Length: 119
Image (cartoon, rainbow, N blue to C red):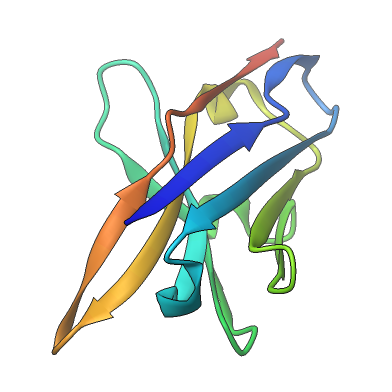
């Protein structure tokens, strides 16, 4: 089992910045990747960014060049720096951790943190 706790959301004007943090506890030694998803009202949850244990990253096209994901393996933490925010970035942001289970993986979720970008 893995527990994830996010922090750092809030209200910001368009063009502003935020930094999200997520701390993992529990069976953290099994985590292969950590990342962030988001879900806007009336929309499906979507991947924002993911980072593997060696440091490989993957970003949604809509956030490339604006968001940066980083990870501190020693602290079992993942961060998301959000720059040049747009109103369409408004959503609940969820931290996630993946643990391999054979040919697939089990995914754990945090409780979510609200990011609101005003125009």
